[in-house]
Image (cartoon, rainbow, N blue to C red; front, top):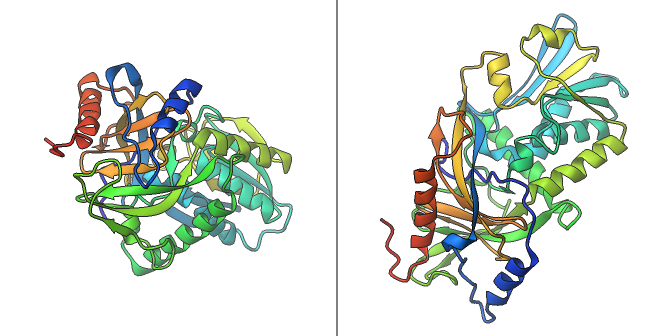
Length: 361
């Protein structure tokens, strides 16, 4: 399956302003109506860009034996790192069966995939040390806004890989559902998918989420029809900070370190390694299937809107620190700088969606 062109929910950790949130909350109406966002120029905070490690053929999750050292790969999740994180971590733990409890395991990468993997391995009785070039709160995952939805990811070319993908989705969703609440920053939210939007939620296994409802008119844009799913919003900075706390509390260590050659992995003292380096794994292992995909975004002052939105020309994710507007899908571009004209178009496209005329140019 080719990657979806949308949903890079990358954002910086901004400070929420109480007046902005209060104003937005007061605009949500009773009786089923929902407020539209305020997208005027004076609400714009900044523009940002995020890079995702998409991998053709799907995430690489497999075990290798290197001269007496066990290595398990867990990378290439694309834009579904949060969505698959707990599930792929569980599969990885299964691949380490046969190693004794208490075995020291090196986890490479301290993004959401690496941290979830480390925590699951601890729960299975392993001792964990995390090595990463960037440690929280400075990882790519830390600056990501996230929703539970399998987008910008290849499910795999074979029936077996697609079945494993569905298994990881189910495992991850159930774990996130157990963490709903302010401590982890995980919240139940509806996501409105306007007509004409391809969605990873359309391809979920039966019964994983309630089926979507069809709407002849959106409660915040009456000229639009859509379907609405119930999913999860994950506040990345809150979630990852809590996860680091849990890993450390269980005895895990985080050590700054970059790897430039595979030989350096052999030199690690741990008997087993789990490679969660994401985009970096492609370069380290010369995996040509890994490609960067850039998404540019516009941040609006935070507004306490109670829904997420995808439409044919963009998307909207209300976070406590910013209202994130997207976005672009720029395959093969690893430059995290933004383009002013592109970001102006993103803002204009999202504004246009809420116009009474309903016309998207």
